[in-house]
Length: 60
Image (cartoon, rainbow, N blue to C red; front, side):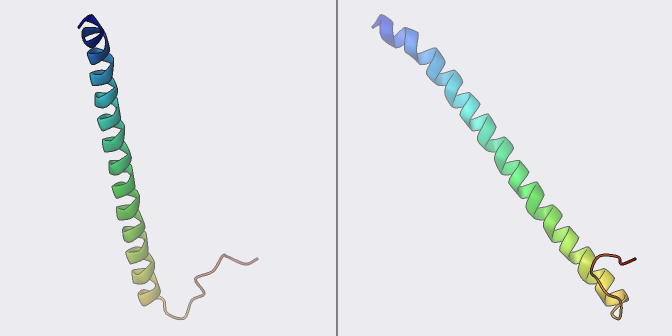
C-alpha cells in the first residue's frame, strides 16, 4: 500500500494543474471570441456611418 501513498500526491497535483490550464485556455478562447465579436460590430458600425468609403488598406 506504500506505492499508493507515493503515487496519489503527484496524480492530484497533475489533475489540479490540468484543470487550471483547461480553465485558462477556455477563458482565453472566450476572450478571443468576445473580442472578435466586438471588432465585427465596430466594423459594421463604421461601415454604416461611412457607406461610400473603401474599407480596404490605405493607399498612397
